[in-house]
Image (cartoon, rainbow, N blue to C red):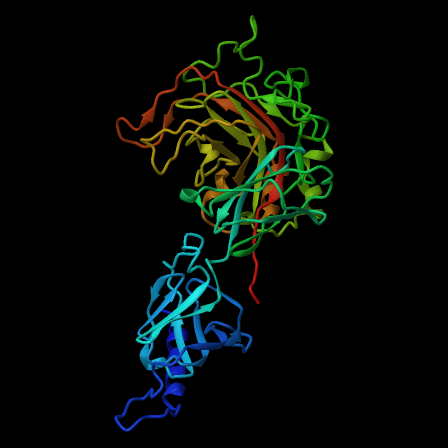
Length: 470
């Protein structure tokens, strides 16, 4: 219960009780109760404000906020409609010159009929009086951008909440995009929009969007490859020993987007007389690694990244991102595993290296299975991409950092640098997927032969910003 708000409203109620009003001979408190309503000012009441401005004049308001209106003719109002939605108001907090009400969270915004959108209507026996006032949903927020390192001409999908009617995207370097923006259809309104990446964006950082509900700012990872791990084109040297794939195993970008060399999760898949030409057999817990050079390679000491990401940064704000293209459908079998260091002795979903709380085990791995949802394991969802997409794996999903405790980027650096072999690893596993201890809680692996391409592994800060209205 928000006691501050209750106390604050009670104080306003007390203040309003002290107002004087005119009465006619019959005791009617609003002799002109049938008069027109006129709004002169709208104030936001904010009991949680710590700056001493509990009340401020506003030109728009968001759902859930409490407003006080000044003007005349409020007496005698029987209904208040906001965007056509009947909104409760307390007559005890109403005078002829002041009215208080809260905007219900169920008030339609983008879905409101155009004839009543951004209007407050006062219904009286003498008629309905309308006041134009901008109503917005809760502040918009960006949760993902894909691909986040796009090439010119690629379509970028921005996902989040309350992203209705986006009209402008400002990219790093102040480059504005206002054309070729496609907003989500009505059944997914506010969940996403797309824009086309223009030429000439050389800087990296945040993107800012402007829509019906105001502005939102993404995490500072758009076009960002400063904290690279490897792009298979010279940034981040590959290792090469008997357990790894090597530079010669890389392939050209199958979509010819300009990404250069990329890695197949299962190299040479489908090539005659090549290893794994028919895929990975069921139950094979891992195949060779894609690995960085590791020990004695300057790129593999991630201390270098602290010039961009401070060592004390919380892991709740950081993630590993990479780009993926799936040629076909990925479903029912196959896992992608990433390890922060070359110290694995178990592989696949639920293994000790990919789980928290295993004493004596350095748990620095994460397993990504896009067709499997552990919250609903009975339903498998085929994973496809029509173009390059960005995958974001928070550091809080890696082994010992998934224990719910507070961790920092320095701990990631320490884990890698204290390992006997600090190669960063990416590889395919086709182990059976056991998601519970009971009988039947295992998804038996099948031949894994989906063509999957990977590129641009990097560390990014994903913390987005909620833009203040004041």
